Length: 246
Length: 260
Ligand SMILES: Nc1ncnc2c1ncn2[C@@H]1O[C@H](COP(=O)(O)OP(=O)(O)OP(=O)(O)O)[C@@H](O)[C@H]1O
Ligand SMILES: [Mg+2]
Image (cartoon, rainbow over all chains, first blue to last red; front, side, top):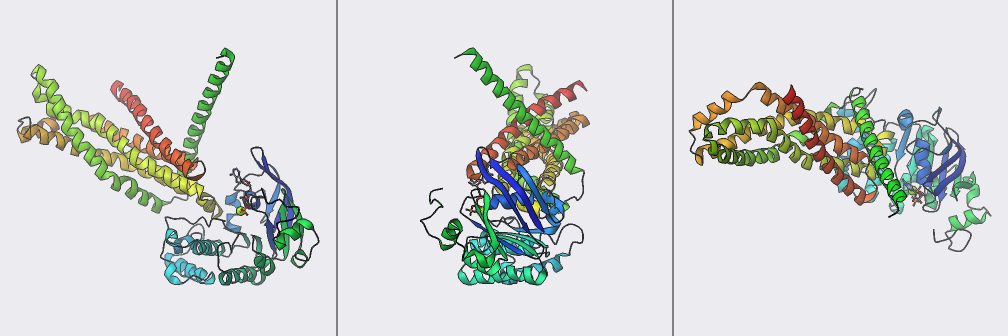
């Protein structure tokens, strides 16, 4: 379960989060949408304890306001910029978690598993030996996704998993995330600007606007909603309550 | 300028400097604490021994060679005034082993290693790799800082020992080819006058300098600002701080060894 209550976060005078509250029950998928620069990535970092929220509580994997280290065994995270370790080849990036800590795997076993995870994000075994700098942006993103899901953590965070991917690959990734939630019973929070991802992945949708979840509800209601803010956003119109200069 | 404003500005400047010093000391304490806690990332230590130690050998060796050669000439120029040219081999060796080997070696390693550590860790910070490490249950202090501190502290005395030997050889080459010394006599004079403590004090200096180099690199890398500019700033600061710390520590250690 992922739960947040009244999260506030400011950078200097700039108030980014002004009381974000929500809950994702175990085995459910929440998709968060919202304008560029509204604080979606900051929200993820606050949930994981990578940024300290100014106010509010986070409950994650049964821990209250946990440190990144405490939740690490339970969560997988795909960073917006992939954040691959550029000193390690792709397969060691993916197998990073598997080769460390208690119950760590041997090199051969870990590599086999890494290749398998790479296949699930549409990358062939020849990619395994390359270094992150040798990959395209979309390939890096998918390696980051493979790293997040390696070790099958029960809670997953994806920051724009399909950004920079072609439509076919986006569909593969959406199906993968949906499958992990439905078949493996994982709990997922996905940030996206891709309405197709919203349709394919979400059980519930939340829209971050002006520092709070302006709208949240079942995925089925998100697209037919009469809320002017949500509507402008999902339909991608320039006229409406959301300014284009921000 | 208004004296109250000047006083206020001076006060703020000093408070800023004290704050920075406090953060650096705090970081050092944290790093030492992490050093004692398992897990120990031995593979990282080995990789850093290669990076910091092995790959610094050419730079340190070249520095020592030319320094030893120049030193022998200078000491000859000075000692000839007293008719004490016979002292050239021993004083060259003592100067190299006690002072110039560790200090110049340390400064060269500061230029090479403090910069690369700060740039590498700073880039990792800027591209969220440090955050990624944390979400994978690995503490960056333990995984990045500790191996670099350990490797630099271990590698630097070895580099100093190699540098000392090459420096003495540089002096020997000049002594024999330019100053008319007899080869075997030059070497005998060098070895007979060198004491154990001359060498040991230089190696201790090396270990301390190695630690300071890695510490500065890691500190500024971990506290790097955002973007390319932040990393550039961190790299520069790491080299400057490492160099100043080496020179300051060198004086303090020399005082300590001198009185001992
Ligand atoms: N470390 C930081 N220091 C200062 N400001 C920050 C920091 N991190 C984020 N911000 C600010 O917080 C705001 C929200 O940033 P965030 O990255 O969360 O946006 P986002 O909603 O993820 O946008 P996008 O969809 O473009 O990724 C931005 O205005 C950004 O400038
Ligand atoms: Mg973002």
